[in-house]
Length: 101
Figure 1 (tube, rainbow, N blue to C red):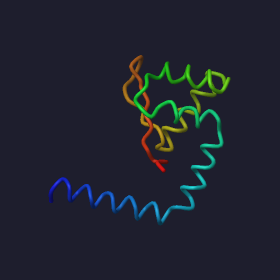
Figure 2: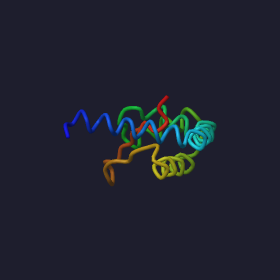
Figure 3: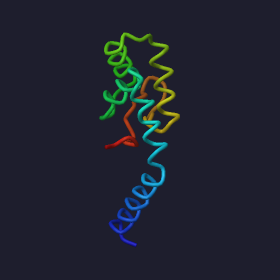
Figure 4: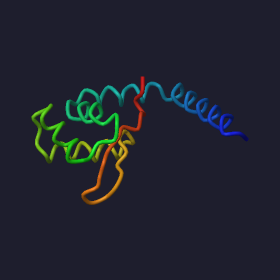
């Protein structure tokens, strides 16, 4: 199977899953985006961003504590909405695109 054929099949599978799970996805999207910290974190991480920079941006945008922002980032990673890369002082985040329009 060619790469293009595989990509087409995966796109179709994603579309079918989005249709089948539209209601729960919409509900979760609404819940996540209603939280200012989660919304700011997702908006600020469309491109890979270093963890410290992301936390500072979200804190500045929401006036939330470092602990709150750290918890929310962990929750977004757990839900598959953010991808965490690296370890130690080299951690970065980027949205996974799960909530693409």
